Length: 282
Image (cartoon, rainbow, N blue to C red; front, side, top):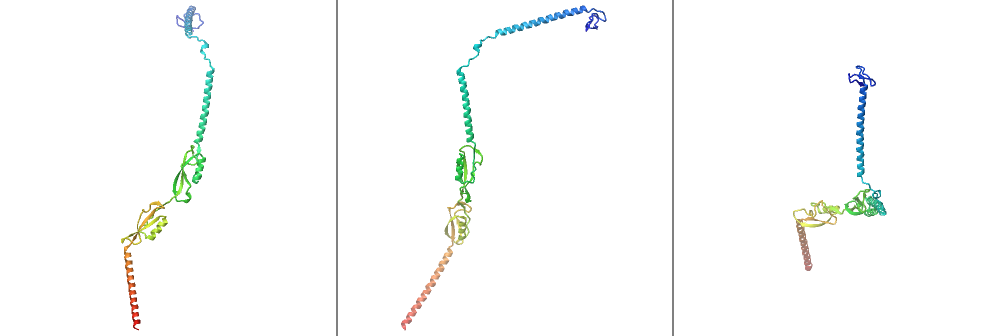
């Protein structure tokens, strides 16, 4: 589309004259073409200058970069370096093998299963632990059940658990309880007190004490307090009251009996003497 410079009317691009004022367009087109050619020349000059500048920069950079000989840059591998590399490879392989062996042994040493020895005799339990490469120690526990004497009642580590080699397993073994409980026999008659002590398995010794304040033949004291546990070999001393009034009564009765006997003997001797005198007179 061509705009008329004279009347500013829009015309077709191939029009030679303005349809409004009849302006001739050939002169304007020639001027425009000249202007376009000038602009193209300017642009070509600018492009040429930029190309030359870039070429000069590239040449300068090429001139700055030093040229080395390829023969001096590349290091030559020697036999010594190859041997050294091979040595390090073999050394690393050897270290890996040693580490794996040590790790496997450590796993075996720390992966020992604890056997169940509860209910076995102490001798049987120690044999089982020795077979499993485990150590043991004995601990005793008193029991009143005779069937539990010499039997492993408990073990310090549970059966089936994992432990290391030579780990110490504590075995609790039952032993017979030789302790007895002292009963209270104070105030009992001697016969009843001794029966109670014998039933409890307590050994005892009897001591008498002369007194008029306590009932005769009654336990007034015991050397060990009641309800205390002692060994069955320990002896309890019980003190029994002995009343002096009974002894004096017995003595007086004995004196009366002896006096009566003396009287009877004297009368009998008198009768014998009288009979003898009668016989002499006759």
